[in-house]
Image (cartoon, rainbow, N blue to C red; front, side):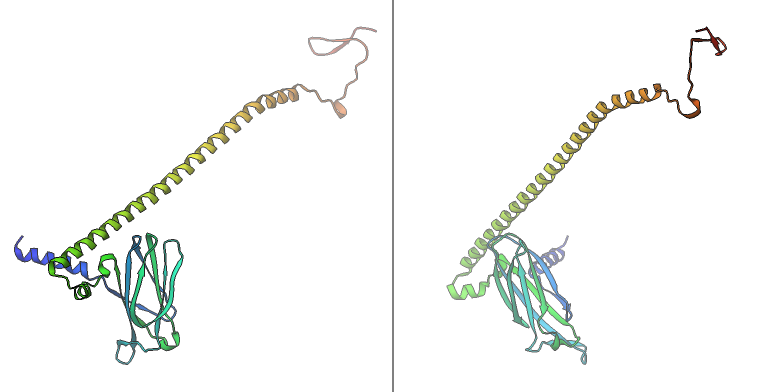
Length: 248
């Protein structure tokens, strides 16, 4: 691989690392939600910008001052931690208190201003060490280049530690879920075996009684109606099954 290819790969990796923004279109009654996995005690910045579609020019223009964005943020426990109407462009600063998946939802707050048009919303979500403005830090604390690099490394190490703790939290949650599922499967199997044993014992107790009652019914002679026979005197059966009178 030549040097040009190596530099191209490095440039693409750095480009993917630092370009996290996106944009989407949203209608009058639409709500767009995004899920972001955030560790505990981590800073989050949501940067957005809404542009209104202009049917005359066929492009998008800055939104009217009357149009804003309603933004809601829910924590992993589905608890609403933010619900507020902001202007069409701005930044939102948050700090997570529970590790897990946070849901960020956005929708326009005044449909009458849109009048059937669409909004194009540019969105960028910065998490952890990416929320720090190092230019402002340098100007405020008068740091040298070496001190700035050390500060960046310390912040990156802190963010990596939080990510590792979050992965441990996910593994623990997954382990508890797996153990709970396995326990339920085990008890369900035990219950099925117990039911089969009870049914087998019941059948073993009831089968002899059923067979005995069947034999009694087979040996019982029922004589009814015209088949009723009254025999008086003493008789014996001949080999031809005829009744012979033996006298009284």
